[in-house]
Image (cartoon, rainbow, N blue to C red):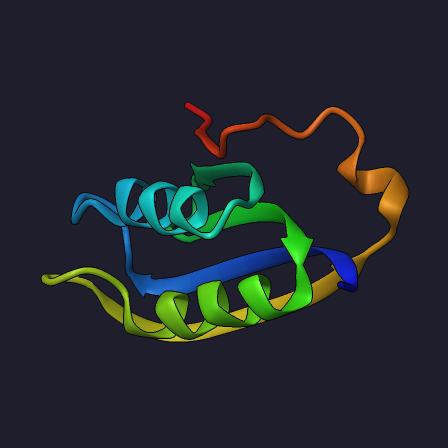
Length: 95
């Protein structure tokens, strides 16, 4: 069981369509820790920590998004285990 920490930036029509709720529910179902928030430029950013397979599943979901969203890009950045310190469990929406 390999653990990882990843930061994602999701661009497109991703605000005002339930995207943060969608991410939170998927991440919780996968047992991930972390957070998701809207950015002032219209993107959604999240940091997630957990098993690599679960993160891969979450990433596939990010590329689809909820109904009424249109995802144009998902940028992934690998973080270090130090970045997992203090991440909320269960996965949370930051405002």
